[in-house]
Image (cartoon, rainbow, N blue to C red; front, side, top):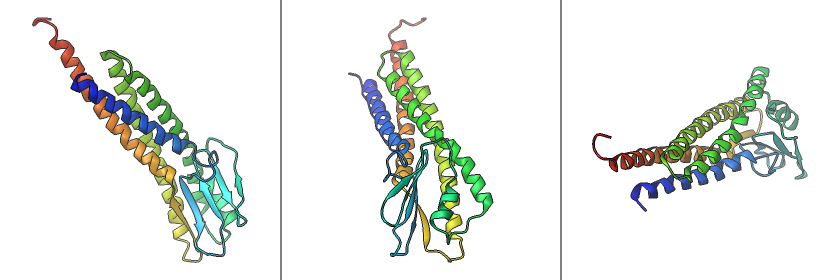
Length: 216
């Protein structure tokens, strides 16, 4: 096995790990109750209420530790449930409208996962054509994941800032959850896999051309 093929397999492995990390983001609340992209909690020790937001909805943990989750859907409005669960929090209607629209873009999470899966399958196929396609699809998956990452962090950062700017009248705070960091790590690995697949694809092309006599 040549060096180029070895690094090609490293790129495929990076794709596989990236897919696993992206799946974690895909199945965050309400699919997996305890897994969140963003969590809103209360510092007040007398309150155990919290809201865990994910790709397709959210779960509310009441003070009796029971979970009440929304039905999975593309796009949701996180602000009304924050206002209901934590009445002391004041968030503007403009923020509510903006964050509601931004959650629609979370559908990019499974799209990026699916594209990464296609790239992985293509990377297992022999031949320059398959390697080239794997590189292109991996790059597309990376671009999709970057777009999702930007939208998510803008969205949740806006909510976090709105809660923090509540004039200190509330002990409620927001923080990014594990599923946000798995998205970040998965996106980074998609970049790594794309770069590796690109260079091994170019290396394979040069090797193929080297087998032909001069003049061909």
